[in-house]
Length: 322
Image 1 (cartoon, rainbow, N blue to C red):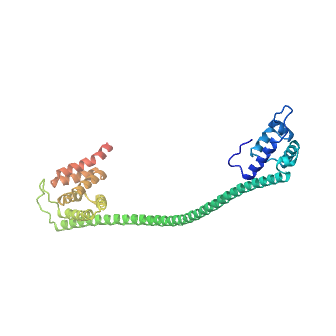
Image 2 (image 1 turned 180 degrees about the horizontal axis):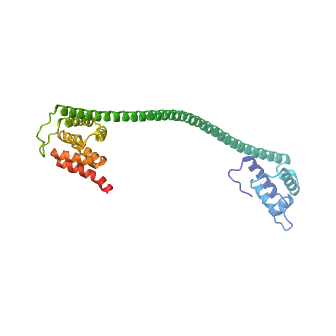
C-alpha cells in the first residue's frame, strides 16, 4: 500500500491504485510469504525503485509493464473475474493518465509560452522607448551642433571686431599723440614769439628779478599756461594717461626756463601730481645742463623744493655716467 501526494492528478492516482491491487494478487512464495517488491519487479522486467514510483503515482509506467502486471495477477489469482478489472479498462486508465500528463505538459508549455510572449512584449516596449529616447538625443545633438556653429561664427565676428577696435585704438592713440605734440609745439612757439616781441620792444625791466621772486617772465608763463590748461582739461575729463602723454611730449620741446614756469603754474593750479610727474620726467630724460638750468630757474622762482626734487630725479643718470 503506497501513499499518494496531494498534487497527484486523479487519472494517475486511479491507475496507481489499480496497480497496487494487482501487485497484492501476485502469488505467495513457497514459504507462504508475499513476494518482495524486487521479486515483483523482476517478473515485470523492471527495477524495484521504478516499480515503487509507479505504485506511488510519481511516474507513469509504460503500457507494456501495465499489461505484464495484469497478466501475472490474472494468472496468479485464477481468472479475470477475480482480478476485478479487465485489461481493456486498465488500458483505458493508462490512456487517461497519459492524456492527463500530456495535458499538464501542455499547460506548462502554454504558461511558459505566455511568459515568453510577455517578455517579448516588454522587450518591444523597452526597445520603442529606447528608440524614442535616441531620437530625442539625436535631435538635441543636432540642435547643439547648430548652436555650436552659430557660436563659432559669432566668435569669429567678435574677433574681427576686436581686431578692428584695436586698430582704431592704435590710430586714435597715434592721432592723440600727434595732437598733444602739436599742442606742446604751439605753446612753445607762442612763448618764443612773445619773447621775440618783448626783445624787439626792449620792454624788459632794468632791474633784475630778486632771488625768491615767484613771478615768471610773461612769454614763459604764457607757454606754460597753454600746456597746463590742456593737461588739466585732460585730467578732469578722466584722461590721466593723456595728461601724462602731453607732459612727456612737452619735455621734448620745452626750454629749461619754460619747464620751470610750467612746474610753477601746475603748483599754482594745485595740480601737484602732474607737477611731480613733470619734474621726474624732465630730470630723467634731459641732459645735465638743461636740468641744472631748470633747477636754477625753479630756485629763482622760490620753488627750492621742486629744484631739489629735479636734481634728485637726475641723480641716477649722473651716477650711471660716473
